[in-house]
Length: 305
Image 1 (cartoon, rainbow, N blue to C red):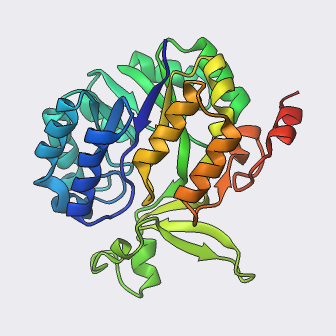
Image 2 (tube, rainbow, N blue to C red):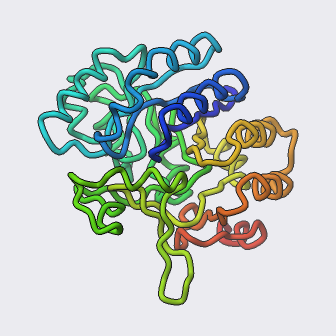
């Protein structure tokens, strides 16, 4: 089976028109098979894009893309529960559940599991499959040897995030608002000033994390372009790109070329560095190393042997 490229949901609070135009360009130009649409981080952002959703979904479907609607990764009140029920009712295809509370609302309806629901072993995966999951995207912290074991034993297609700042945590509190001396209710959407998240630095002025509203992300950008071949060999069928503010159409083209054997991973890394100059790459989680590290190919081969 040929590898599938997936454009994950935009995690950041981009202006509604910017987000709409992003999806239009993905529909018209990107070499991806599936596109995830929906607010994952903060329900307060949802009204901004709601009116654009129908035309975005229609444009993507006309372009032959599968559309998956992504749920919130943390449901904390009745209003958000109602919003997720509406999302499930209106979904043109699969819903991506990113909070176990969404599974209750799905009630066994076929769906996919997003990377915000942790799967670390085959028992957890099997439980979710019995509940109606027909696909699962693994948490980016899952090391490669565990991914391999899960892929070999899974009865449903597995997906791995291979590009983008890596989601680490979600909270009921808004870090962006706190950084501006505001409350969550009075945040004034401070997160819209940082299209790739707000960088948190150590006292030595070293990039440490990135804040995105209620979400904590890695400072480094996950990049598993060197690991695509072993992931394919293990049986992973789907590869997710998490949108950043750089050129994601060109990013998708590079990953597609590597998956098709038309571009060497080393050349791909060089090209991706040009497209995303402010995002240092990392693949440490894959090798059970600290996640912020980038393990070079030679060292990576030694780590696997």
